[in-house]
Image 1 (cartoon, rainbow, N blue to C red):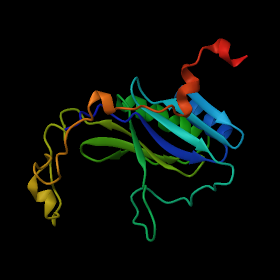
Image 2: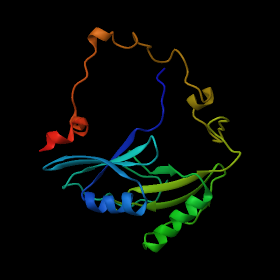
Image 3: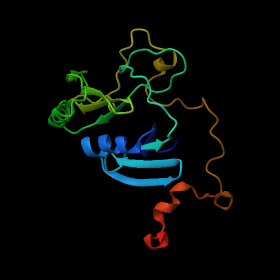
Length: 196
């Protein structure tokens, strides 16, 4: 089984990268750590933590999504509800709430969900975002809880991956069969002298 270490990046879309930079870098304080681009295409990365990033493609013809409150059921084609960013302390949560209010951007009251305290807002693209701080002493990762009154059949099997469900496959490809192809980000590792 693969070992996951976090989210390298979550890729979203905007039609206005500068508006997105103003919000994510300047309001939220997430460093802009990489940018790729050419006419008609941009892909910029913001640092959430020492490991996790959020990225945006800039597509000039995309439109803002309709504003939809977090967790409200949707109809029709739909894939994404909201993303929650973890902060370290309740003080961080209150600081973010004050920043949103000072910028005249809607932000919810602080909500106590038992295992996290959260606030909710929207970015300029109408992407629903949440900021959460873990409640001390409540750790659902180490002590999973299933409180669904009508759990699905498979959820009753427990939190751990069930062996024997999917083919295991032959394992990783032999070294001699492995090929890694250059992608857009190769420009980020070129020498700066190469840009002249």
